[in-house]
Image 1 (cartoon, helix red, strand yellow):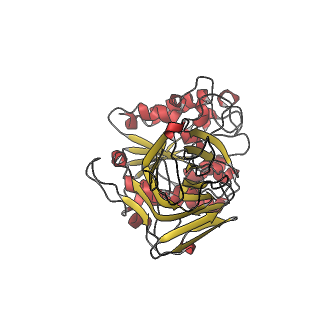
Image 2: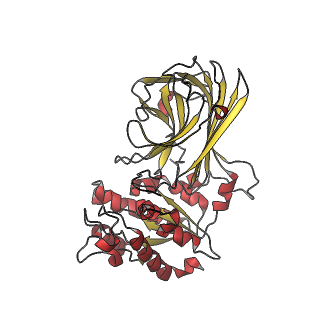
Image 3: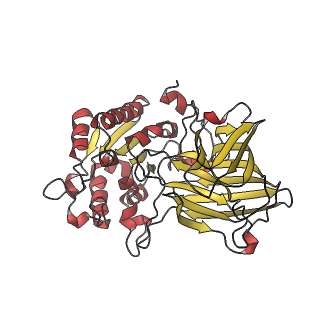
Length: 423
């Protein structure tokens, strides 16, 4: 078993943004079996033979029929601190029909507690006049996509796909953009692409959320496809993420999407965004997912180590309490996170868990104060009411998330306590 530091070393440092991609993972399926992957095959089938992953069946369900990258020795999971590129090459094995939906490419939430904020790009392989050959971007929270973030429109943007055509489908993810590109060869040579964004909370009552930590995944929606290659690389722009002075790491509160859920709200209303754009000579980044627990932060430690920041600012543990994770587990996870980072020369800064009305978060804050000698910023007391709950002045309205006033208070608190990061 590799140590996390050894896994992080798999990330090859690159001298300039013009350099070639770094391949984190490439499968040509020559020596694998389907047992090497995490799978859900409720109404679909998948097998590997002769260097090809053959998939068929499916009923349009986005959660029950999938193949996810979870192979031993490969530590990489999606996290929004870098720009990641996933490419799947496959041959269409059927004539387009009403239910030959094809496959979707993206990532499946790794959260074990039901926060299924997965995201996929889908090239429609049905025979519908409107949808055939178009790319759509979806966020998935239930058994079917809850939110169609964007779909191509107009006949000129769609591919005319036939049985036997080969598709090279590339999906690019960053902390703000989501892009899908399909290149078709066979009956004709053609290509199409679409780009969307994660900045969802602009006008209520929209409830789309940024994706949380996830495993790279292929969803089997319908029809038959012969997949010959599945590759995950970095994007050259990711090199700009190396050696940042700090990374903000956590969950919903670090993303702060609820702070822009006001009429006319924008990403600039988030405390994390305001903190990052206030930096002058230093550089920052963030890696956070809604619903993430301490276990999800452990999953993405290899990627965080590979980015080689000087500081990691941590605000994590609230969802562990919410999901009933035992105190022994989340305490051990916090120690693992902290000790792994420190062992690699990264300084840890803790932000206290912010107050909530549905449960008492003070056990996490008490443990942090009693266990670690790192820098700790009190982001609990300024927001609390007379007890341990969230002051109504700073309540978004659900008793769990802070509003713009709360975000402004946190930004002011951090600007004072962590002024050295804003230099």
